[in-house]
Length: 78
Image 1 (cartoon, rainbow, N blue to C red):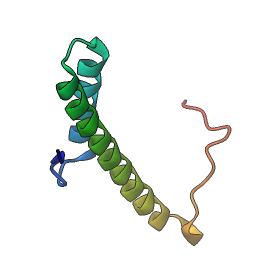
Image 2: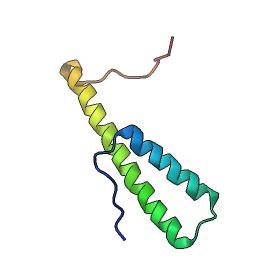
Image 3: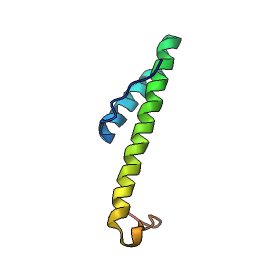
C-alpha cells in the first residue's frame, strides 16, 4: 500500500502531521494494519521534513560568503 503525502506541504504542516502520527503510534492501541499504515505515513512525512530542511540549508548557504555557514559551536542566545 503506497502512502500518498502532499509534496507541496510546508515544513510546519508536515511536522504537525508527523507529530500527530507519532502520538497515535505511541498510544499503541491500534490494529496492526492501521499501525503499519501510520508508520509508513510517518516515514514519508519525516522524509518530506528532511527535504524541506535540506532546502532551507541550501538557501542559507547561498547567502553565506564562499558558500560556507558559520559554525554553531559556542553560540548562545542572548
